Image (tube, rainbow, N blue to C red; front, side, top):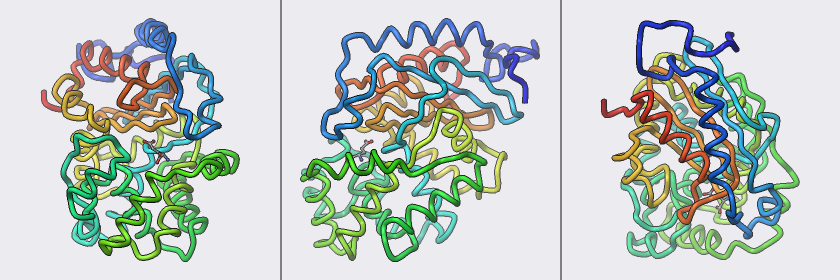
Length: 316
Ligand code: GLU
């Protein structure tokens, strides 16, 4: 694996493989500056204890190239970045027809934990990237309790992507330390509409998988599962996950971002962010300072720079 940079070959003038370490370093400095004066989410106490100026990025290409910058030793919970991987796991295990019997494919303009959206849809979870859809899918993971379901997912992901995700027990305790009435009401509504059988187990599984944690190296390895022709994942499943990340991955900012940047991306309230550049590589970012929609400020900034300069948009 080369650590010397992506810019060895001079033939293509755009694309992820043309990125140099010097370019990445320069954008990383600018990205970190975006975190000044930011707030952290306070509904999970441990997330509020993060340092809002933390920033790390790692980029992996399909041919083993790797570039990184920032505090790459930091580990963090995936939170909502786990959602595409719960979906991917279930698609691989049971196929699209079975999975989309329990969750939709439509984007939502409401926040990620909106009960209003779920009510408006008569209890039908709109998509797997928002809490209602992810709680419904957590309920489909195999296993009798939250811990064993989370462990099955963790092992599958670690084996497939050669990463080292672990369950952050302290984070899980912190998630459970304050009542999350919104998620509870969502799970309850899903149970009423029949998309969840045991609301407690579904919610507990969702909380567990959100606390799967790792570094940007783990996240970029994980991201390669979604990069075309790289790993043993069915192409149609990869396409489904990448499309849903494009249309639903950044909460209510998804469609604007798809138009302006055009790279399948999923963010989480921890400040984790993963972008997939099909056929090229994966970009993993961690920076806990969030914007109003709940997306990492520095992560979005960096991705905009990369996408623009390297012409990464999937729309050509
Ligand atoms: N566990 C978090 C929640 O449900 C995850 C949300 C997110 O990362 O968007 O509030």
